Image 1 (cartoon, rainbow, N blue to C red):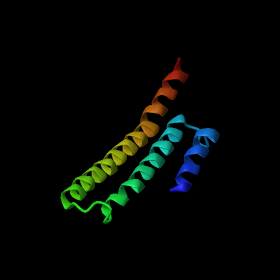
Image 2 (cartoon, rainbow, N blue to C red; image 1 turned 135 degrees about the vertical axis):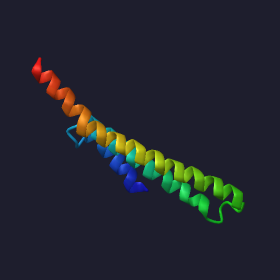
Image 3 (tube, one colour; image 1 turned 30 degrees about the horizontal axis):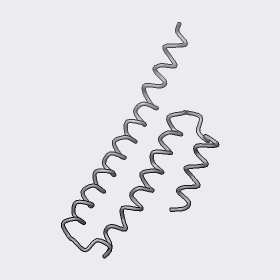
Amino acid sequence: MFFTYIVILYTINVKPFTLKLANYMEIVNELTILGLSYMTFCFSDFIPNIRTKNEIGLAYSVVILLSVIVNILGIIIASFVIPFIKRTKKNY
């Protein structure tokens, strides 16, 4: 988990990718990993109630699904929308 903090700070300060969108996506992905890492503690004996563990598991699955959707949208935007905008700006 500590390494995730380092990667987030590095990405915020250095901005290693050429596209702003890629930098934002990296930060979102690292924050998702960090949040899911903390949620895994809830699956241990820390929480004895099975129903609560099931609800946390559902939330865990929803977070992963939202992360996949956001990443797919990011890929679509980076692959189609940004090049289209750049092409139309060159024509004018």
